[in-house]
Image (cartoon, rainbow, N blue to C red; front, side, top):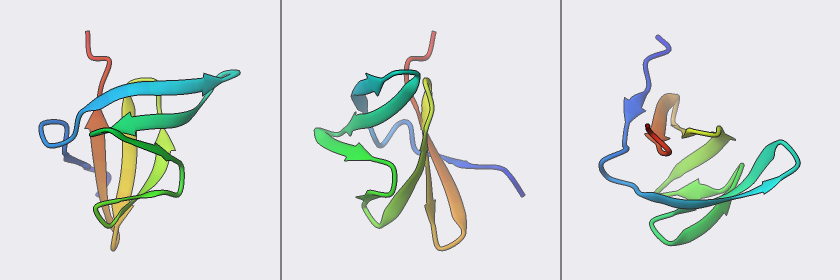
Length: 68
């Protein structure tokens, strides 16, 4: 299943740092994180322009931001 568990109400993305067309860093709940970093045991697998994708023990999660 590709359904991701939505954690948008638990985590707040307050900023991103962009290099070229790639979001290198993201600020979640005051922590500056990048791909491969851990957030409460979850690993950041992708930083998209409107969401951060994470994984933990085979489960997939997402944190949405920049929602219009």
